[in-house]
Amino acid sequence: MTRCAWVRVSAMVLLSLAAGACVSSRSGQVYTRDDALRAQSAELGFVERVSPVRIEGTRSGAGTVVGGVAGGVAGSTVGSGRTAGVLGATVGAVVGGVVGTVAEEGITRSNGLELTVRLDSGRVLIVVQEDDEAFAIGDRVRVISAPDGKVRVRH
Image (cartoon, rainbow, N blue to C red):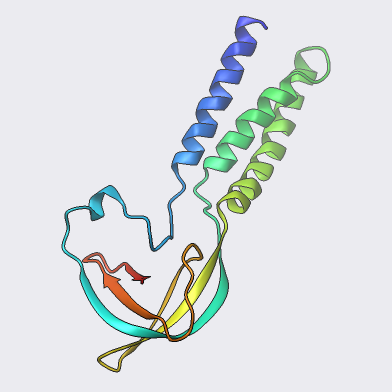
């Protein structure tokens, strides 16, 4: 593989890693570094309803950039001559950007749960979070509220 090809492959790998870093969790079990060592309040209640939902994926632009670069690099190798290479890179970048945008949203999309919880105080909350913990009607749960407004339901 030529030096130029190695540079192109390395750039695509680095951009792919950067795109992966933009993904954030909507799990009730995952905490950010900023959540650690911060007081959070909890209220107790019972699950009244559990409904499956779809949590849309991210559209950070990272997929567009990675797809555009990959498409541009791939397109530049099509045809012979300077004009064909430029045209191929341009078309490849546009198509790659569109594919990258769709791929990012699809890869980061997740299954979720809409949980209706009746708190012991009588108040009813509805919380949506990733479907990575099993809940059933009647389960005794904690509704954990962070100072930044994030709320999660845990057993």
